Length: 147
Length: 190
Image (cartoon, rainbow over all chains, first blue to last red; front, top):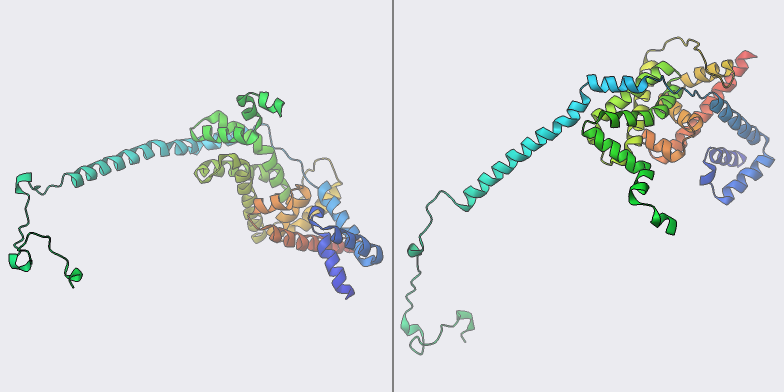
């Protein structure tokens, strides 16, 4: 039971204080007051945190760093590569537009000869007159509508 | 509120560093070398500092930072939001640091004492360096980003490309291991 409480304490001790609830903060405080091992653990962690922080290097690089990066970018022709996509893209778009235009023209004016208006076929339906009761003066009714 | 409204639009734009950054990225894409230089100047300190703390080697840190910038500019087409160049280049730098750490672990070399900058005793710094070398790259990176670079959990997660929960558990493990190593090192001295 005590082990589990201590585990909980150590887990919470690593959390960002801002992420902890009021209940968790209260637990940390009360358990640290009653458990010597956990109190020592917390002190150790705080000490190590300080040690790490004070061992941080504040190296900011040489003054010519930006020059060196610029040189490497220029020698690697990165800017050219960045620019290269524009003419390439324009060429690709122009080609695509030309292909689409040609396709559009071909589909709207197909190569097969079109029918002239005078050649428009007319359907001739020969309906026997005796099918209609009135001799064909009225419109025929749909088979489903009869009877 | 009235004061804000009275500020000319161009002035408010100039105050927004993200918008300014997006402008610089846009100009770099057009091949503007001055914009590229400005981006390097803006971010170099952060990149070099982090790389130096992760790798514990200022010279190597500059190499990595330079490589990170080169890679970032080369892969600028992958950047969807121009305002996010800062985190884009930082992530690249962190990834390059991990790659270097993995290579170093694969080929262990003797630790040589280097010239130290002021702050903290040389002995402590050298011990910290030695102990950090014994941690796996991911744990070491998490510890350095959180403790030395003072990043928030969210920032560490973003830089490493992992969920915040992973950062939390890695940090827990890293601190525990560092504490054990620290205790052992001091026991050995006694």
